[in-house]
Image (cartoon, rainbow, N blue to C red; front, side, top):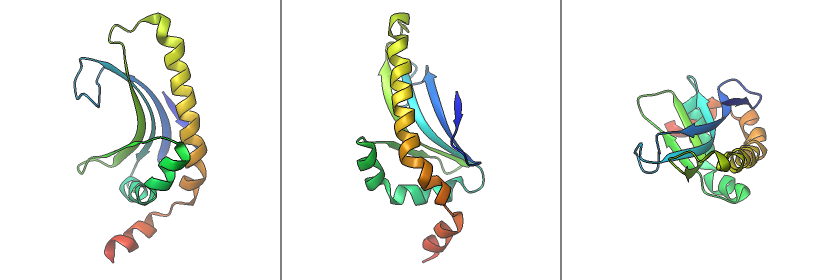
Length: 128
């Protein structure tokens, strides 16, 4: 499910996936609360945010996974949790709360930052 953060090319995603990105397997499900970047400036924006990763993670009071692939124009930074592969319905309210809480953390820390990002700043720094 996607959630707006007020700027084109950025969105918060709540993910309940059968592919586990940590285990790189379908053997266990995962929850992911992520900031997703897409479009022609995604790599530059990701680079600018990643330069400030230490301060961002300190504000979040947690470590993010910073993920990008060279052959795509999308990137993401996320919190991940392994969940029961059997999808125990009794745990769904806890899973929803985990997603809500972590999406709110991401929104609170990233919202102001992404409004100020200028992809040209990355191009200039990369050229030096």
